[in-house]
Image 1 (cartoon, rainbow, N blue to C red):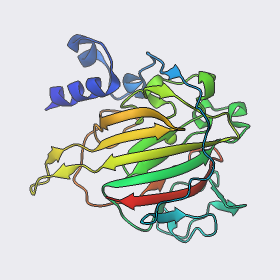
Image 2 (spheres, rainbow, N blue to C red; image 1 turned 90 degrees about the vertical axis):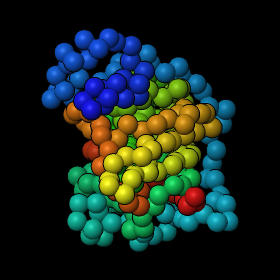
Image 3 (tube, protein in one colour; image 1 turned 135 degrees about the vertical axis):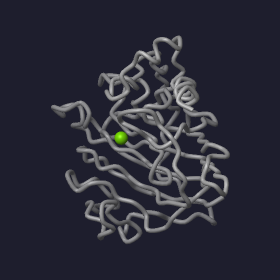
Length: 256
Ligand code: MG
């Protein structure tokens, strides 16, 4: 089992290393799952779309007017993030937020903006750090990776499934400007005894550029250690509050 998990991680990280290297790593340290190379190629988006109107069968998660669909992840209390000019913005220090409604397979549209001052953060880990968690577990990373000017491991930069895969391209907008994520997601399937039958799968289009192509998610995101699956049912869309005032607008979802 252990070897299977390690091999799965390797496949996800596109990491070329022999088995001996893997077993010599100390997986109690976060550095063990950082992959710095190769850096994804930088692609300038054709044009970042403005507000994309949802199709007729979509459900708004955030329409610019109310935070009523959201609660604090920690305790289910009302969402404390800021709502101003149609944008919901991370209230630094408040924590993650998540939808009241639970989802499985879905098409999810997200628009987000990393603050212009992100690079001046004294802590690079907070340089535009946020994220979109599918089913509360699987993070599509948000980070200030514009032109790769903020040093970070490649499998933790914008558009990665955090610490699992390097995106196929870096199509970031400048800080202070809007990005779009269009996410096509198939939830994991579990057997009646709780074991994994089929991993979750994700395709990501970032600013009109395909950056993840049917990637098999390796399990629940881990900052330290190896991802693994745990049995779960439908679950919320979660947005990460991670020390940076990232803004969101026009969030909608189609259940599949
Ligand atoms: Mg994050």
